Image 1 (cartoon, rainbow, N blue to C red):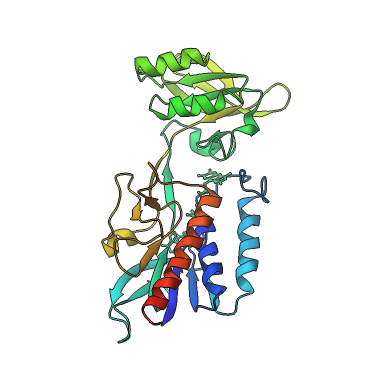
Image 2: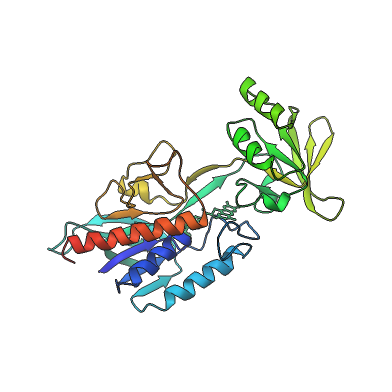
Length: 311
Ligand SMILES: Cc1cc2nc3c(=O)[nH]c(=O)nc-3n(C[C@H](O)[C@H](O)[C@H](O)COP(=O)(O)OP(=O)(O)OC[C@H]3O[C@@H](n4cnc5c(N)ncnc54)[C@H](O)[C@@H]3O)c2cc1C
């Protein structure tokens, strides 16, 4: 019976394991090896690691965790989690099944992240993480001085155009055949953004004059616009089925409902990182540092919960 099983070895899970390891808690971290920022060639907006590859960041985090003898990291996919009766001193425990067998823990910390569902436009998936991006704080500065495209007509267009207007030489919004609201049109006028309503046929990689990596947004009428970056708005869904298996409360965002301490609706189960959403924020906050910070808070709160149970 481990003190805790952490499922997920991204920034949230690795930081949680480190925090628990610091007080010599017996922790098992299980990692399927699929990370949200896998498509990205570099990671930004992470102080001390700005521009590092995500893999280098995780390798450094794993080296940190490896210094703590009570923490075990195993590269294996978890298939199922369930609540079981724990030892007599505690209210409950958890069983976690993998292809290697079953492990038990007094507490569970979910850090399994989300999966991005990209717009179906051909070519976007191939460019996502380099020339196409969803977050100006992660990939925005890299497109500086070029025409930047924004794909879609939803509310993200207002926010993204505001952030990118400061960075790009010009903006083009590709609504892909959809209508913009009057309010959004007025906002885009103020930001001097071009609006293209013709449906988008595909997006192709293209090196711009001057050698900047970019893309050609090809429209249904055969014309094309060259951009140095294309902002898109993927939808997120849970990467793992554990919230469903445990019957955890979700928020309207689809993320696991947590409180400020990373506690879910089920006692003994904590959650941190992209998969979780605290009521303090209008949406699930997702970034490397936010995930790591949430992992630290959830782990410390898990430690306090064990102490409160006399463990
Ligand atoms: C293209 C792209 C680029 C990005 N760039 C940046 C950036 O530059 N800067 C930044 O701050 N943020 C960036 N982000 C956001 C960042 O990747 C996430 O906010 C961060 O990775 C969230 O960390 P996490 O630990 O919650 O989840 P993840 O990093 O996604 O980790 C999830 C973990 O859960 C594990 N897992 C899932 N299911 C199972 C299972 N069944 N069994 C075992 N393990 C499982 C996975 O293997 C993985 O270890 C980017 C996102 C994308 C999509």
